[in-house]
Length: 183
Image 1: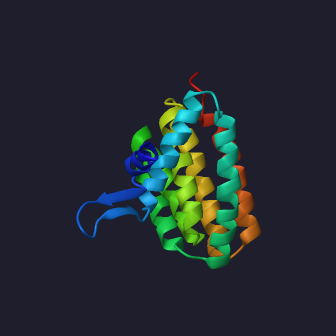
Image 2: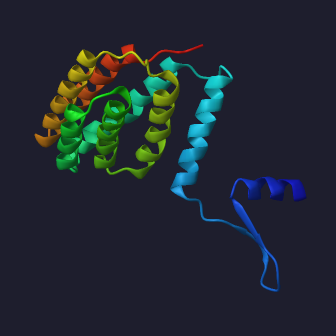
């Protein structure tokens, strides 16, 4: 029993206090904790040959394509998408360019208005970036990404859920070529 309590406490799931009003209590879970745990777990699963880059990319499609559909239906955050595209277009270099690319996708998921989608997509996206992104992506490819993002944003602005979902799906399929499994 003590070992179980120690294990749960080390995962920040329980909190123990001493004194007359003390005891062991269930802690409120923070979204950031869950996100970090998912990201760490996905990284460990990849390292243990439990998941592949293909599975990670398929998961992105399963999560982000419906998010684009919801974003178009709700038409939230369009201005933030446009701002992200503007920063993308002006940015130079792999790190900055990818950060802005990630921001764009994050805004789409936020625009869907579903916190659980945000919680699940961010760790997948981060593991793909840190472990699988090809370091030699040519600048011409990023120009295509920028154009894809404009197409997706326009569909969302026009309230066209089918076009937004189709454009994001096509975009994610195109992105497959920039991810490599380094094993």
